[in-house]
Image (tube, rainbow, N blue to C red; front, side, top):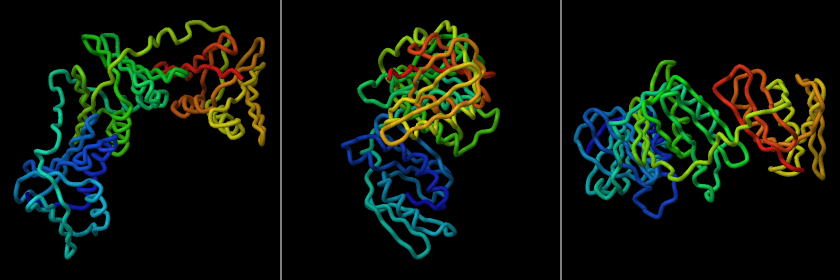
Length: 368
């Protein structure tokens, strides 16, 4: 193989495929990625056996071929090269030669045949989804997913797609986030658990590529995998197997106490209170009273109290929440106000951004 390309194109490709090699592995070959010629483009592929990424970059292909290259060493070399001189890359005897001006490197590669097989995206069950809508729904839910390996089934977001619309749900057992879109539909109900790892990659990809308002992303769903394809990039991941909790039972159906507060004010005061919480998981106290919420926190070394206005009337009460859970909800809404619906100080609170019917959140109070 022999190609000419630019530092910018090569670095872009490495950055896009790099997350597919961050999983734990004992296979040395997985520290490499595949570089393969494809007409007037170069295909870069990497996997950690849980997720795989394929990305095409522009290049001048002088001689076709394929090889695997150590990702870290290749990236380190690229970062040291000047950006205004074309890079020539060619292979000889499993060595990958990299030349830029008078600079010359070689690194030891391995044959493509030694690399694990990369699954193809399922072309039979593809749903076109608006890229910005997927980005918004994932952002509104992913923070509530668990990151504990002992609760593997909660390390993903539940997708439920059917004739009535599309719901995403995430929970870690102490909080729940739900987002929906009634425009994205499927004739048959699809229920899958998508790992947060690939969804974080989709968020990163979309933030870099900034899709236009009507631009779509193709989603291919098979029995045990999901694929995402947009422009020159395809992501494929295993799905999480297992039974997701019955999330509808967790969402409070009734409430007799409703508090409406400013998102901006509550976020600011919660962040200040979190500084004085006893530890990272420390609770912040919210005293609800006529027309106001008093927010307070204390530890052995610090104490804090502040008051913000609120729309509330009736018998006051006091409850406590993990400040991170409250902040996560407030950071991921564009609404100006949010409603807390509760029955008492110890039962779950239902948080609904005012004017946003496409999302809702449940937070368990902390018993102090």
